[in-house]
Image 1 (cartoon, rainbow, N blue to C red):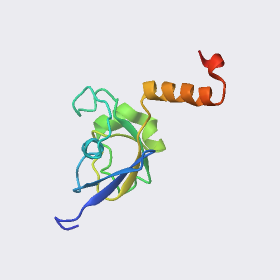
Image 2: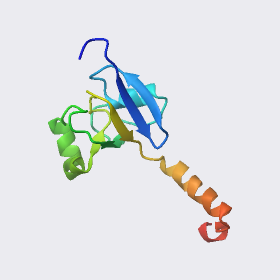
Image 3: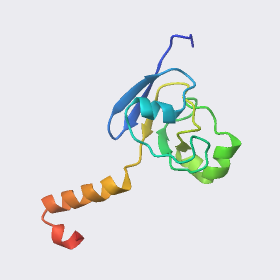
Image 4: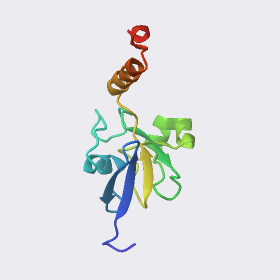
Length: 121
């Protein structure tokens, strides 16, 4: 990879993308794409708020370090990574979890459209 090469990170479900340099963390790429992914620990693998699911991460991301392995355990086998710890090496697709408050509002709006609002309140 030469110094000018760029990597495309696609964030789902919004289909937003970020073009980044190799070695940048997923958290930095998320921010570059204008997506809010909350954290409290400042990228130190402490709060686990930046969990994301990665499609076909083999070779696309730096292997998890011991801190990430301890925090995530078997979730690593399911493609879950900490955005603050995972460095990007090649094009990758990343699923960002939906904000819980937005998810609740979305479910209620969808139910209201179907006429089920009474049941949810």
